[in-house]
Length: 187
Image (tube, rainbow, N blue to C red; front, side):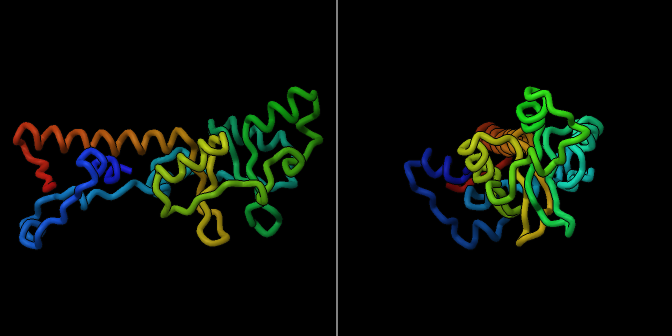
């Protein structure tokens, strides 16, 4: 998105630098790399925890895990460890608390969003692509899947932080360029 934004700002003209410019180590707008979901996940609160729960567990175990890790969702897995869904705080509130059901008797799989209805992303997708998926479906958590294996989960908060870091870096580079302090871009 960052490169696309600059291209629009420049009226759609983005000049590729000559080899001599690149050889001199001058950074160009074409060098700008979009942040990925995998990068956002590595900085996420989910990266250092067990963010999964077996779908046959009672909901109370999921609630305890959500509270212990201070997170808003868990990836649910079947007996083989495969992705079976996602359980969020919202699922608990709307399907247990409001209906006055017992979280000790209801199983996670009874209230979780099933894998067939899940929106997922790969770690290589950009943060912008992930945000579009999440905003388009009004969801706040996105499991990261590599092939068929779940490799992480990110929240809209993680993506927002990543986008803000990317924008801040870009602003700093452009400010340095404007003041002559460095951050040389060839346009």
